[in-house]
Amino acid sequence: MSIIEQPQVYLVGAGPGNPLLLSKKAERCIKRADVILYDQLVNPFVLQFSSPETEWIHVGKRPYHKSMKQEDINQLLVEKSRTNKTVVRLKGGDPAIFGRLAEEVSTLKSHNITFEVIPGITAASAAMSELNRGLTERYVSTNITFTTGHFKDNEEQSIDITTLKNGGTLAIYMGVKRLPTLVKEIKAEIIDDIPVAVIFSATRPEQTVIAGNVSNIVDKVQSLSQIPGPGITIVGHVVRELFEDISSKEEVEYVKFIGDRQNIIDDALEVYETGGWAIIDDRNHPNLHPTQHTILTELINQTTFTKVVDTEVVNV
Image (cartoon, helix red, strand yellow):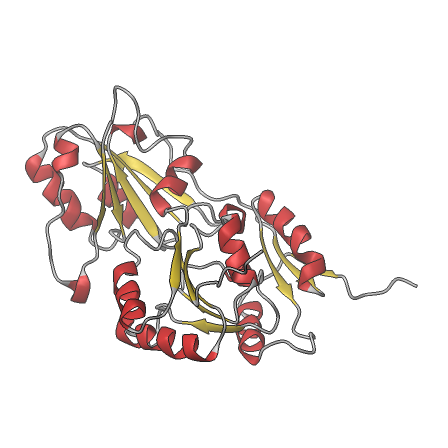
């Protein structure tokens, strides 16, 4: 049987944050990765599907940190593909939806680097599944538009609300900061007080849903004491009859497992099954890549755990 040569680079969608929503193909790519370049919205636990020897490189934007420009990420992809067998570029959600996929594909093509795109569950789909609703609904909404409220260099652009005029659904990514402006644009074109839901941190333990209408959604969001993570705004009658805001569970388990990740990973996934959050502390691994040690240390130090499970403790 002939051996099929694997691509050098995988452009992988990590989904909305819950590692249980990672595709099997994405998991397989991460497991074989020599280096992973990952964005801020990627759940760090997803990285732990990789080998302890895999290099982890954070290339996303973090508050109060200097962020890497897209041109620099492109160059890093090229450099790492020359010195490693398999490079995984890990992006939150689906890389083809506001993930700057085309720019990275163009770079790889121009350098004759083989690659493959692995889709992921996008935020809009994940958010609506958490509401037990669909983005489309027969007799209610038969079309949908994905748009962004954030534009390059923070330039002001109008959103296309043609879908709303035709009774469809509008999913606005990265639009919470500009929500007052976006709502004003909708009001200027549509008389009806259309239902709106803003879903923060969809599928994560801190998930929060703010429900309302075009007339009151801005005030409701601005009344929050703090913004609970990235948010996606769904406008349309598919989010009708959401009368109450939905906050995350009052008591969420944050569990630190200590030991070998291959032996613990299923136990950690069980925590996610119950709506909790988990990470594996395997910093004692003899071959752990220095980047993993640094990233895990920072993450563990800034997390307040409700439970610690040490699998390395031997009962006598």
